[in-house]
Length: 193
Image (cartoon, rainbow, N blue to C red; front, side):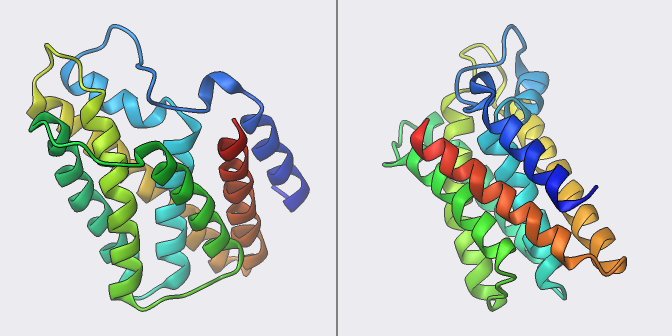
């Protein structure tokens, strides 16, 4: 897939308003399936989860596994906050910021120290986790729901890692950067949507 095609796909995806935000529910699913479907039901979550994997692989070394694990771990914590009645300010804005900033970091090939990159994605994960926890159906099992959204998130991270490593092996770092630019464009769309 060339850079032009990737950009077109990103723009087309951004023009689908029904996919802009995942926080509108996914239908009559409950428990594990609801949790599994929730992160894949909106452009904001898909872009952010893929971006975490892409950026982690782009940085290389221990970041490949440590950054996504930091995200999943802190997201689990964030998911428990609304269940405990603890609110978190700026959740939607934080999610949009995560998409925009992660896209820019990938597009610019910015490599940060492991502690800083893990801390940054951890902050983003807190917002994403809070959104997932707040969207849990009343009758769903919290444990099953959490396992579903954690698994979906991890799978999206793995897809991002696989894409990034695959492109790097083929010496197509520009495609990885173009994917970051596409993610950043989705973030800009979410800002104005």
